[in-house]
Amino acid sequence: MTSAGSEKRAQTVDFKFEVALIPVSDVDRARAFYANLGWRLDADFPVGDTFRVVQFTPPGSPASIHFGTGLTSAPPGSASGLYLVVSDIEAARSQLIKGGAEVSEIFHREGPGKPAISGRDPARSSYRSYATFSDPDGNGWLLQEVTERLPGRVDADATEFASVADLAAALRRAAAAHGEHEKRHGGQHDHNWPDWYAAHMVAEHAGKPLPE
Image (cartoon, rainbow, N blue to C red; front, side):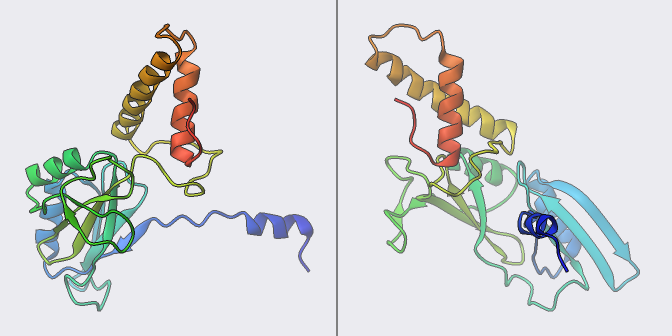
């Protein structure tokens, strides 16, 4: 018999998706490719000739990738649609190219299911700008620019940023919005700007209405 307390605890357990498995044909080649991108090598555990697991984590990501020997029967290169969410797609694309990846030109869509249009979304709307690249085996990655989450996509009570770069980008957006806020209020310096920045960053991250 389960108590009410234990049932409540069971309902609030976090299920954190942390690892995606990608199939590769040459483990050392894949390891070199992802290392050159600047991704963090977390593990490389060989066990004889029949098993090896390698783990990499993209910068600022809470999730990692696994590849190796004896991990999957999926054909090498068959993983596709692996999303990498970034706050600045142009900077992310440049960083990947510098690391040796062949990245597509940036394109955007005016909405879900809409055709691809060349170039970054003119309004820099979240979820609309993309670029793609593949690893040496053909496993496909998709970059997606997200600067403001839709409502309900994050826990509003747990605002956090995955990296210094993401936090800096959020601060820059808050600074630009705060400049417009000061203009709307007579151009006077807002001595409470830290509170305004905090409210803007939390609301943007949680997909809530932004402060005026």
